[in-house]
Length: 135
Ligand code: ZN
Image (cartoon, rainbow, N blue to C red; front, side, top):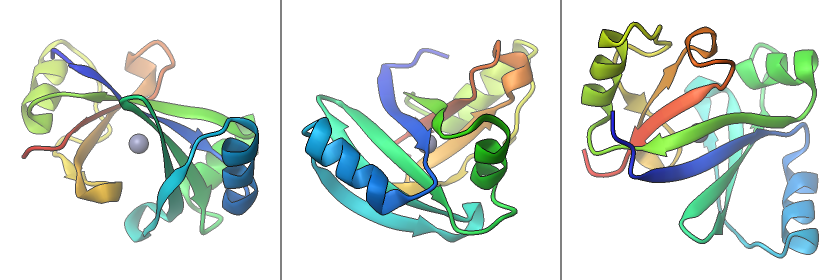
């Protein structure tokens, strides 16, 4: 895998509206999009800093992985997303290097991009998302 840049940083929050206020009023960034991703049971909000996005994730259900994350660890950084040319190829290459995958095949994430997650047990505790725009 040869990521070109960090696409976004995913941050788990328990209240999306409050979180947007913080990021806009204190950090001075602008929220340019909010979206519900039904199959991940989250509401998301995006802000941009340079090329990098901040993806705020609020659980919409108690069995959402984000709800479980907040319950265990509290709010905070949830994952880092790396941009590659081809998500499926990167997942395959990574698996070939002995890394456990959460997603064997790319799926659609927020903003309609192709995403896949690597398992944090294989990535030294960093939940890693692979994504790409141009597939
Ligand atoms: Zn993400």
